[in-house]
Image 1 (cartoon, rainbow, N blue to C red):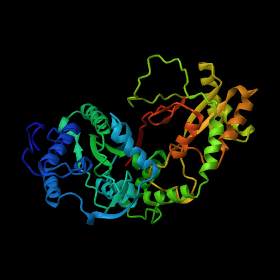
Image 2 (cartoon, rainbow, N blue to C red; image 1 turned 45 degrees about the horizontal axis):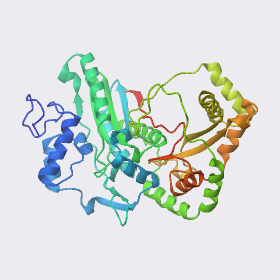
Image 3 (cartoon, one colour; image 1 turned 90 degrees about the vertical axis):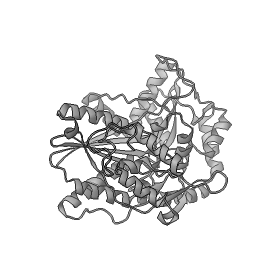
Image 4 (cartoon, rainbow, N blue to C red; image 1 turned 135 degrees about the vertical axis):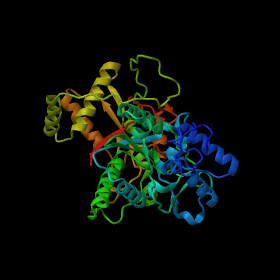
Amino acid sequence: MGRGVRAGRGRGRPDASFFELGGHSLTAIRLANRVREEFGVEYPVARFYEDPTLRAMAAYLRGGAETGGDVLTSAPVTAQQSAFITRHLTHPRPQIYNVAMRLTFTGTLDIPALRTALTGLVARHEALRTLGSFRTAGAGEWRQEVLRPRPVELPEEDLLARLGPAAQAAAEGERLAAETAAVPFDIRAELAPVFRLLRTGRDRRALLFVLHHAACDGWSVSVLLRELAALYRAAATGAPHGLAESVPQPREYARWQREHSRTQDRGRLVDYWARQLEGAPFAMPLPLDRPRPKELSGAGDVVLFTVERNVRAGVEAMARRHRTTPFVVTAAALARLIGKVTEEPDVVLAISYANRERREFEALAACTVSSFTLRVRGGEAASFGALVDQVARARSGPSTTPRRSGRWRRSCARCSAPRSRTGCRSASSTRVPWRRTSSCRG
């Protein structure tokens, strides 16, 4: 364990923190790889982050890998899990599927209460304790295995005590946050979340919270953060957390998804979308400032900007006049802009879709998001208002939208549309990473 970390105070002690000895995420991965080579046992990096000590590693190795007794239940994977498994295993930079958050706490933080809250969160949501090796069951079918809950250790890494000046500790915290967010998950091991608690100032701490996209989406992140706040408040004050005693789980969603798929009239859906997409221009000649690579790297970014208050008010007013939503107005505006730039008024947009039509899945922590294909025929609209009405009708469309599935591929084939490795190409299908930062006061 000492190889790759600097000598110093604590070296040789079985309870010394690997990171306080100078280790970092890359050496942690190398250590996990060496353990696999020497002992034939997968040692999840996420577990190492929870308790980065030689004592914890030895205890784990004495018990061996997870056994059947640790698995509570097994179920088919969801369509989204299956897609992310394939993409993760084939992408040159699988860390693009990390969902990284940093929660900043100022004031007095009750660290034992935070550990209790995180332990309770993991116990409530099976997505946070799913065996990521997803056992194959037959020809290409994957299954998810849910493990028994276990305590979240969450040792504090005191950067202020180790480095001294608060500015230096804060800079090191920024570096560790970026480094932790960039470590790819081992999709064949447990997909447990990565938790790291950094002290960067006298009364300032940061909780790093990294999930795999197979376990969450934007909706789920909101669910998890809201519940974490309630559980922390309850642990710190002794008051009831007020949350529902049980929540929906990914295995229940997977079974519903399969049952729902069997009852759909697939032929009718394929026919509908073949008609909708017939002749659609899937290749958009955008005037890019550099050549588009043949294989997307995934090293994108998020460009944030703020529109003036009167612009937002105008969008909302138009949405009210046309009895639709601000999203529809914005999508129509984006399609018109793309049409103007490309001189192609017929535009196809790939819109992220929450895919949570059923009330019982509103509190589900899992990735349910899909893509809604929106064709905007700008040449058929005499005015922007008419274009908004057209987008509103198209958005209502059929009860089921074409997703990255067998019927989506059949629709593309019937339309003779060019496809990339991940499906039909469209003007807005480029993926970008997203991050969320919250600030909490003690």
